[in-house]
Every structure is written in structure tokens, then in C-alpha cells.
Length: 309
Image (cartoon, rainbow, N blue to C red; front, top):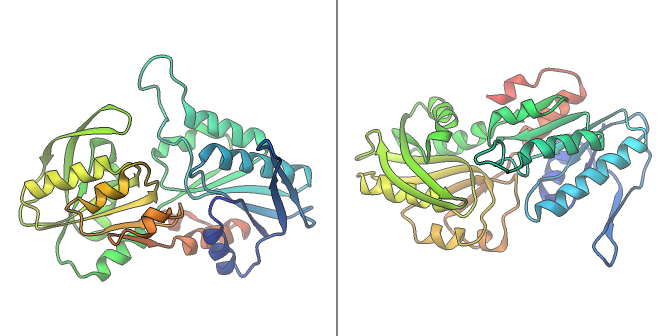
């Protein structure tokens, strides 16, 4: 087994390699003056079980192109099996035709990964679990729930109510609430255009409750902040938030700082940007152990299903 890393999230890749008691594989990633990527493997990988850690975070297009080229390089170097370890799956939000004449970008990303030569995908908290069906190769979709619930239970907040910020996230919020032994509430939300959300009402009793908003990612934080304001207006005592992927683009940090959210708990599937690091409301937890254990089990041909819970 050998573990290699692209440029998107080197700290997480190093943590994963450390858990697996390995050093990151030797390779060189360069760019020509016009921006073209040049990659080569600096050690023998013939017959090896190769894992490439590369998150599809900003700049997503550059990082995904890196991954395609890396996969192709390992295929041509006669690696026995190539697993793309994508803590954050780029273009995952575009997984269906929400209007005429648009691409299904999540499906195209799957096709490109398979065409590049990937034999397996290891990822975390896909925006829609159905994305696994876009692939003709095995996909392991881990969840950050064990890491997030362990942290929340350690805060000793008493009884909790998990709040889904929209109807589409009810399934994962229900699973999260079950693991916490918490009640469930839902925010009825409409999104007239991308990155713009409008909250209408709260379904469920949140008055006097300690509430935790739960979503798969935080991008511009519009959904999260509007949800926090809605449940605070409905009488919530305390408001925290949890999410897996720290996209944090545009006005996200300012919105969070001005919001009633006491703490936003994220994971390191995407490295925090400078603004995120400087925000006192944000805490990032590591998912390296989950990915490291999944990699170990895949390499040993043992079951990874227990890690999905």
C-alpha cells in the first residue's frame, strides 16, 4: 500500500498517512508558465495498492485536473489498484436537472474519474447519496457523524434538538439526531437562485431548546444563518451548528460572526482559509482517523461498512 497526495489538502493527507504508519509517496507536482499541470511519480509503484488523497475544494477545477492526471500517471505506471480518496466531492451539488438545458455535473465528474483510471472512490458525506449510482466502480461514502457527535456529547449541552436547514437534508439530520438521542426539527426553506435562500417557517418545537443546525456543507452560510435566526426567533435557547465541509466562500465568515450561532463545528475535509482560521466561532475536527481506518480496511480486503455509521 502506498499513499500519495495532491496539493488540495496536504495536512489531512499527512495525518491519514501517519494513522496508516506510512510516509506519503514521493512525487512532483509542477506547473508550466501557462498554468498546465506537470506531474510525475518519483518512486516505483508497479503492483502497488495506491491511494491518492485529493479534495475537490477551491480552486476545484485545478484540483480535479490534478487528480485526473495523477490517476492516469499511476495507471500508466502499472499500479495494481488506484483509489481516489476525495474527502470533498467537487460538483456534488449539481446532481440532477433542476431546470431544462443544464448539465448533471456530478455525473460528469464520476465519468471523468472512471475514464482517468480510478478503480475505487473513497469520499465523505456526498451531497446526495444517490451520486454513488453515477459510478460503475465501488464507492465508499463515509460520514463525519461519529466525529461530530463525539464532540457535541463532550460539551455536555443536555437535551438537544437537531434542526435540518431544509427539506432536502432531513434524512441526514434524522440520522444525526438518532446518534445524539435528540429531537428533530425542520426549516421550510425556498432557494430562488443559487446561493440565495429564503426561510419561511420552522416545523417542530424549538422553544427553550438547545438547537444544533446540521448540514453537509457551509458555503456562503446564507442557509445556516437564516436558519439560526429563524429558530432563535422561535424561542431556541442556544444555537450551534455542525457541518462536514467548510467551503466558506464569499460573505460566509462575516455572516457567521454577525449571527446568533455560538459555535460552528466543521471537519478538515477542506482546509480552513485564512478568514476561517481567524473566526473564533469556528472549530475544525479531524477526520483523518476515519479515512485512515477505511484505507487500511480496503487494503486488507476487510469490511468498511461499520465506518458508515
